[in-house]
Length: 426
Image (cartoon, rainbow, N blue to C red; front, side):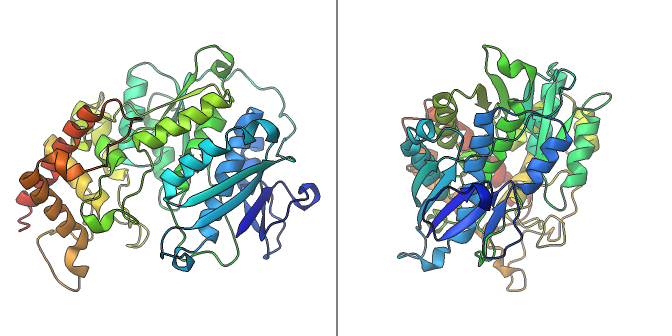
């Protein structure tokens, strides 16, 4: 299936496609997809003026998410790897097409699919908003509502930075995102909350989430390009704060190499995305200050422990938060890492978990698959050593600090091991 993603029906290029997706516009026709209409409205409402290439990057990101939703893995030859072809309308297709190979490499790493990407004319070019007061923030921080992004934002403000916070809004996190932004310093920090609102007919159910990170990063770039500092020589920092263990996200068992091993903040993905920003002369520097820290170490080292104590319980880590009525399940991998981090930091974990006892292994509790996988990973790493257990997870020339990352993964496994022992998991 080929998707053509462009501004609206009136401005669609004459390009053949199997599905058309309206970008920053909703035609109301169910036979077409749409994405980003609310983003365009929210940016206008906030009277922001993003750079044109930032709009183009977001157009690409929205097209990727739409394609991810539209293509069913079960229909692929091997039941997993999909062949995906997208055409994306941008302002300067000749320039963007020089980077098609890089974009395809980035997307292949992110979703484990085979991508064909082409750029066509007719990109979204909104009229400039009325001039506003100077945008005095000196960086952008993604504020997801999770514990890691909260710690990152706290540390930035304590260090004297003035961040613009950017969030992807999902039900269950909107209020906590606003709460965190309002408490980071007296008077709070400015918060921009966005959602791609992707719709495609006959979408895969549940929709794939592997491509979401490119949209989150594109939101951050869009926001960064509105700041006064963006026009300066030094790139505007975009902080994406995630503990290193989750960033590497090594598959706990051999069966988790595919669907359960996502790459949202993986060092290779970050390197490829930065290459794209540099090639397109988008003046933003992507950084994860915590790539060499475990989640427990992040809690221990947070620069404002009192504020963290006040807000930590309101943060969200669970991979099944919506499934369990907007409550932490307590047993998925993100929940396990969260619980292990509190234990490592010597903090009382006040999070309400649906399944508090990790030692129960029953059919009613789905046999605690993630708990067993974590136990197997810890035991295998203990037997083989962390380097052999990791295998090829960090085997890339794009990772210059692989030895330090392997050491960090070892400490992350030790945190999980301590939790499992304390919980009586055998």
